Image 1 (cartoon, rainbow, N blue to C red):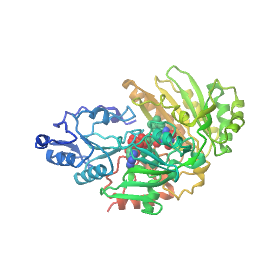
Image 2 (image 1 turned 135 degrees about the horizontal axis):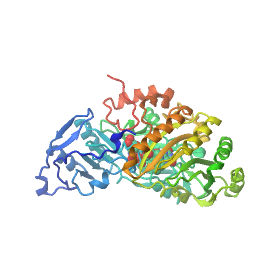
Image 3 (image 1 turned 90 degrees about the horizontal axis):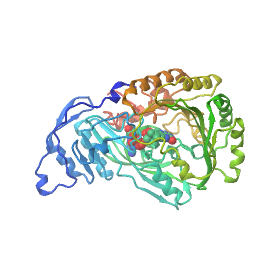
Image 4 (image 1 turned 30 degrees about the horizontal axis):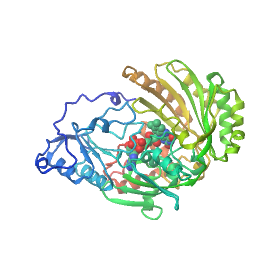
Length: 496
Ligand SMILES: Cc1cc2nc3c(=O)[nH]c(=O)nc-3n(C[C@H](O)[C@H](O)[C@H](O)COP(=O)(O)OP(=O)(O)OC[C@H]3O[C@@H](n4cnc5c(N)ncnc54)[C@H](O)[C@@H]3O)c2cc1C
């Protein structure tokens, strides 16, 4: 990990004032001090206090400066490795605020971060000294059961989508941790327990409300702005700010068959070998994500996170072969409410820990891959949590043509990432180095990477998007020629 990610900014406090949400007559005459900001070009400039005041007056939501009440919690994101201080946080109340904020950022050429659920593994939803568009208050979720459509605001969390849909016996693909943001997850793809059955989260999007780099509001769907609809499904935050999503929902049994099967590390090679074969021919209703973990107390194990969404009566039979590979040391696989399964990793992935991840898509599973995964976890020896995880692909994900949406890596049987999680700043460098070295061994098994996970090697963007890359560049050049939306796995616009 680049060292600078962990350096707390020692920059002197900039002159700024707390700015109220609604200006009283007396307050509106109190123009805030000039605000020091960073531009897209990396230059430090002073924003006039009167310009900042004008922006605040145009918002229904809040404009926060460094000493505003609530600033410190608003700037924090899920990954504790990133401790950044935006000069301005626009806490938007709706699309109109997003339009104002984007126009302001564009006209002043401000470095701009967009925060949905705040779970960016690479910390790109917060920036030092730029503007942060914070969508966290735009978190409503509404279901139309007749049309089987969920309308979800751009800053909502997955738990809201699952809960509202499940209450009506409906669901769509969402990620596996309920406090992750719908916005970032969906725009980058969106793997989850139902993805092999219903496709990625982005495959289930029917329409998106988008604010472009010019601050224009567009409705984007298969019928309107079709090219952009293609790009938004996998292209991440490159093309604008999504203020709302319409998702296709599907009838499901709210009770599914799932939980964890945990095996000893000694059994891991055998289990992994069986698992890869089994996963390749599993029914679409079965999703199994595998992780090999090493804890700071030197405990190692292999975990299968199982979810079968088919007829519950078939669950035992479907899962039986996994129980027979070797005797699990823990087995919680049983009938369980889907919403509970979706929350089962919430605590283990709580906010504020430091994380560093390297990721890529597998093309095939081989004996050499198994050896390298086992060796990676066997060799871990730091006071941190280390894991190699392989969320499953295939099924409905693979039945969408690679060119049908921007998300190109349809054929990958698994996504793979290696990660370190820790708290003590004294191990920042060691954890970063360990992850990078582990990835050197694992990366040759991969092709492209999942843009929603971190891979700080931008040279792999073309590989990631494959034949879709040139179309992405054309779209980016048309919609965002100045690359206002650059804090993401970035598709650079063509030079004018
Ligand atoms: C604990 C945890 C569990 C995860 N589990 C899964 C999983 O099961 N499946 C999976 O596929 N991924 C998973 N991920 C990865 C996840 O998809 C990404 O971290 C994703 O970026 C999270 O979205 P967010 O809105 O919370 O993130 P944010 O940090 O808010 O945003 C990340 C980036 O997305 C863009 N963005 C976010 N919202 C918007 C918006 N409304 N409009 C425009 N751009 C936006 C911005 O470019 C931003 O930099 C997980 C991540 C974490 C931390």
